[in-house]
Image (cartoon, rainbow, N blue to C red):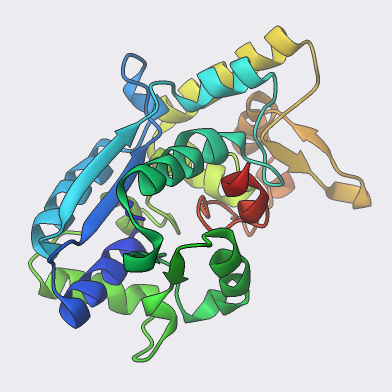
Length: 268
């Protein structure tokens, strides 16, 4: 299960070193629509890294694209994905990848590799159960243990330049720095580093709010012990005028193949 994240590359690299590259497939599900704004998919440098990383690993890169972008999914589903339930993951990543597996891979001779590391071992039992009858494993959760900085250094030692989003301070290199699972801290980084992409996310969120005629939002305002929607337009005004109201430590984000709803979503 391949992506533009450094953990995904490290996982694929470790698999290649341990088992070779015969019959090694790097399966990437692209969330960018085929006909929509480039801001709806990955950061352009993430796409660059995916191609470079595949050449470095020497596996076969297979790219899946359902055809819609995340905003089309939200509109069609009449539901804005959030940190609790990301229907974009389910419909644009999990289901297309599961369909590809079932059409191309014999469970008796297939192992699925997921790019989480030793810090997320609590997620492994659910992952293993979700991918049955395929065997699933997480090589970066095994020795030798590496943190993200060590993986980035390893990547550079291989002559690869990691996605630029890491240098900008993003904890993940997926979905262009947005992500409906991301928190206030990550959208703060997006606003500071890529205001045009932030403006696109803000406009699309408001478009969906108007379409649904509901007070829904990606972010949550949890001040005072009460959780309520925090639209990106309101959050931007806070960033500009009331930064003390911003929870910069609220990061979240990523986890399309390891979230808590994984078992239900892949099986459904």
